[in-house]
Length: 115
Image (cartoon, rainbow, N blue to C red; front, side):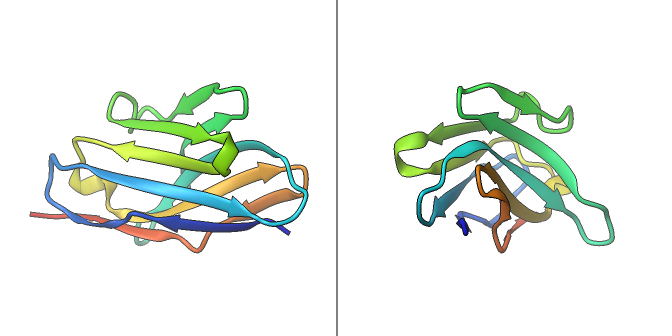
């Protein structure tokens, strides 16, 4: 089973930046893609960004041009650089991994954007 650990959330003012990390660990697995979805209070899950093992990325319109995902395959780690954060970006951010062992999700990290 693949374990997923996220880090990097916190409190930031509007216009600020945060960087999230997501690391996968386990035995004998191969990652196909990594991504993040977020869930704001009272809202449904919102898949915002993903990257495949060959580097292809996809962004939701709500974060395009502000968020950047990257992946270090050697470390089984993905990074989400979030710039120009807005109040509406406030949510719990979950890392999602698609591997040859199926789908795995982290415990989530809170991102709060507030003045």
